[in-house]
Length: 147
Image (cartoon, rainbow, N blue to C red; front, side):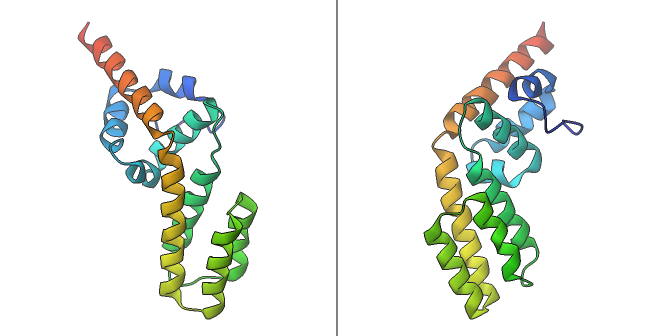
């Protein structure tokens, strides 16, 4: 879904979804990490979680950490305030700022990856419902193409 609007809700995204997109997301759905690492699938997961009244805070933090990791090894401590504003728990924030103060880019990268792992674990709690929804959508689209 290359032209999806951020304002669309999950139901609208599902109605517009093509079989190829459903197949692609279904293939990724065996891993929470693969879904979170794919921009299109992550957007659909985000909308699903919003439709289920679940917090997307961890998705936002995961995504922001990924953006920081792309800039490795150039880290600016002021940039990491974004994670605090997104709601990064204080114990993780303290770990990150400790590593920032030491100035070791490898240690900072590992800390960002650990933050992503914690977010991944939290998202995994509601992931089976998302996977069920994608499976149902995929099956419905397959049935439409058959007949």
